[in-house]
Length: 112
Ligand SMILES: [Zn+2]
Image 1 (cartoon, rainbow, N blue to C red):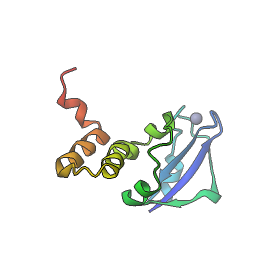
Image 2 (cartoon, rainbow, N blue to C red):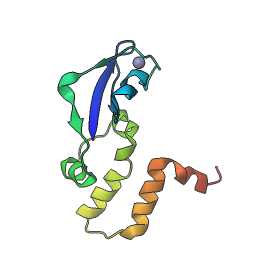
Image 3 (cartoon, protein in one colour):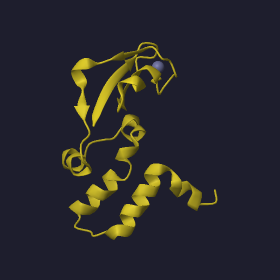
Image 4 (cartoon, rainbow, N blue to C red):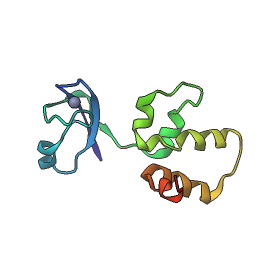
């Protein structure tokens, strides 16, 4: 699926959107400041990669900044990769926990 990269003209933030229909492009808003003044970065069209691709490229030794965690797809990736490196079999239950963490549902399980 095509993912288009945009830069906000107001706050200069860069972000990517999955665009299924071209009509959706006109409704896009900056994820940071909400501005509709976005600039499409034509040269940076990417395609959705599978989790195994992401995991293969992912270096657990590299420091992860704030940006890393803004991408919810990266939540749990580190833990999964570390577990693989350590040879631990976390089983399907762990996948389920990661999925819940990604969708934010895990917070509902705790009475905070
Ligand atoms: Zn912005």
